[in-house]
Image 1: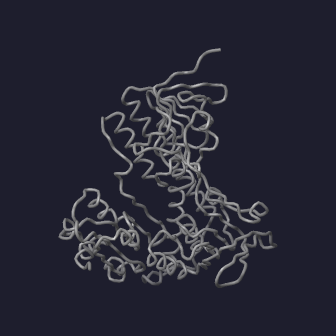
Image 2: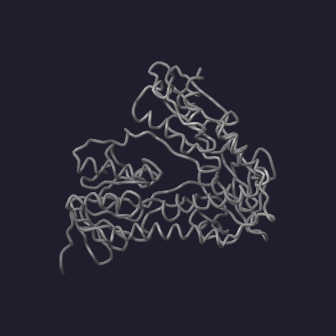
Image 3: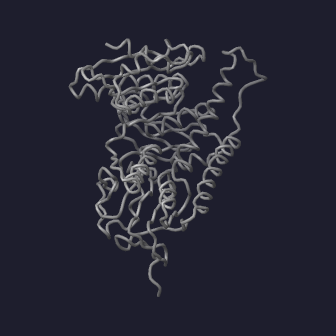
Length: 458
């Protein structure tokens, strides 16, 4: 029997970090084994960012068409949605992106692409079926999947997760979504705009509970204005079959004790794909939720093994996964000493209008005990929003009054996911807010109100 095939590096998982790291390593003359058991591109390409944002775009087009008269535009009849065409458009985007990633890897000099499920045999050796591969450096980029919590009756009824939602080509009559956070709210709005009745059930007292109350409340108002029903404080949730689909029993402070829907989506978080890699056999430490424990440079508890992306618990976003690659590549190949703790937390909620956020919430900033300056502006006072007829939302910035550093900001409103980067860049540059305060931005944009916002702080 021949021995293991030797490489300079093994990468398990072709998500956002893995292929780019393979590119850097092979460009440096190293041989790399890239192992992928299912779809190239990971969650973002296949079931996350790209397909959902494609659906969001279709839903926005339907919503805008339904408002055509507000803009003085006359259509020939009522707006209709062809869900088979919507799905095909979404799947085309996915297929193209996935194919591009795979073609890039297969054409990469020095890279060997292997299909299969990898498991650790030792700290430097993995098994894929009958084959053994060995390398002094192993990188885990295995991602995550939808979490299915233990709720009474959920094993007795049909339910959907975010992956299943990508396959729908018919419109649910009534979509009941359990989970009032980022994934659930994006699906709630898009399917309401496609024409479904939608109810969101959240166990907490408000939507996306990590946000400041005024942000959460405004998001709820936006969704309810479109006809989405929101049920909060649903402390006891259980499922049962019903002639019309699924009955969801809820214990809430207000409203009927049960909701009956044709379809149920469970949108209650994610879990890492770390339970079938043989980590325990080689002593790679995981936390109580299954995330691989890493240090500030993404090294695991076993020398020579790193973890990137969703599986390490350091970020649940495409951009943080890609930054994990950047940190590892810079440290290994460029002599740098980059750290996860250096990056600013930034993210977006892609409802319409979107929420862009960076840094601390106002609640978190107040908890520091620092003296703060806070600026607020409703989108009704943003010219670009008024001109577009999209005035829902608000802008907020929080500054340390003594150091003059921006601690955090949120823009919930049209263009908020893009405009937030002006503030993010100033924070990354570690510049005082005054450097942005006297900028002369382009009119008419959402970003032009950022200096005004900074001048109005108190």
